[in-house]
Length: 67
Image (cartoon, rainbow, N blue to C red):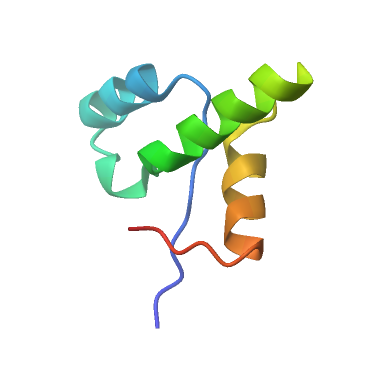
């Protein structure tokens, strides 16, 4: 079993282009769109902007499965 490496960056589009130019696309993790929606909803309600990694980890902890 191979362990997946997730690289989180807030600037997803720039990270994508960097990964293409550096030939490291297989190591890039782009969070599911639901992670972005949840983060926006939390920020709107609380005024706190959490990282994408924090939100995705919390969603997985609560039972969400990507996809």
